[in-house]
Image 1 (cartoon, each protein chain N blue to C red):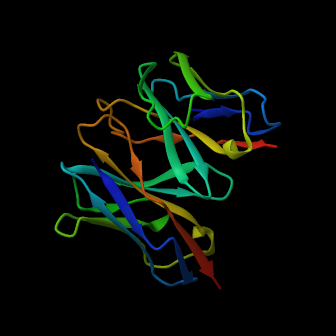
Image 2: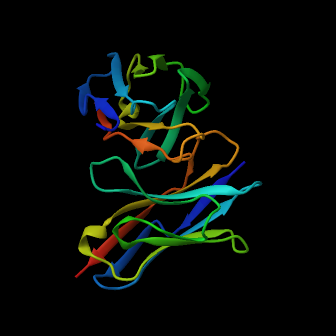
Image 3: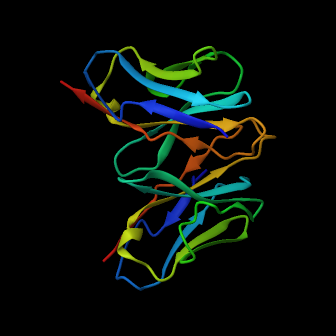
Length: 117
Length: 114
C-alpha cells in the first residue's frame, strides 16, 4: 500500500493567493482528517470526513478555509485568500471504519509545508 | 469529552537510560489510547495502541505502555534509549463509540544525549 499521499510537499506563496492542498487516502479507508501543525498551537484537527461527508468542521479557523471530498480517493483543503499566519505544516490522515481490525487508528501522510510570504 | 495531558514538553535522557514519557487521560467512557511518534519533517507514525485487551501494550522499536485505569494513565516506556529515538511523541485518546476521531496531547520532545 502506498500510504496516504499528499501534494505538494512544499508550497511557497504570497499573501492573498489561493492555495490548494491535496490528499489521497489509503484505499478502503472511510475516514479522512485534515490537521494543521504549528509551533505555537501544536497539532490541530481542522475537519474530518466519513464516507466523503464532512462530520465536524469546528476546527476550521475561518471562512477562508474550505475542504472538499468529492470521492473516496481524493480530498482538497483550500485557503483563499492566504495569509502569513496560515504558514504551517498541513497533514492529512485516513482511518478504516471500526468494523476492521485497526480500530480508530489514523495513518498520516508526510504533510505539506506551507509558507505564505 | 475526552482529553489527554502530556507532562513535560521536553524530556532529555542519556543513551542507554530508561525512557519514560507521561500521559494522563480523561474520558467518560472506556477509551482507546494511542502513542504516535513524529520524526523531523515527517508525519506521525503509530507506535502502539490500547483497545481494552491486555493492559500492557508492546509497540514498535522496543516501546511499551501500560494502561492503568485507577491512575487514568498510559505512560510510554523504553528500557534503553537509543539516539534514533530522538523525536516528538504524542499521546492520543479516542472514544470507543465516537467514530475514529482522535484527541491528541501537546506532544513531548525526546532528546537523547551521548
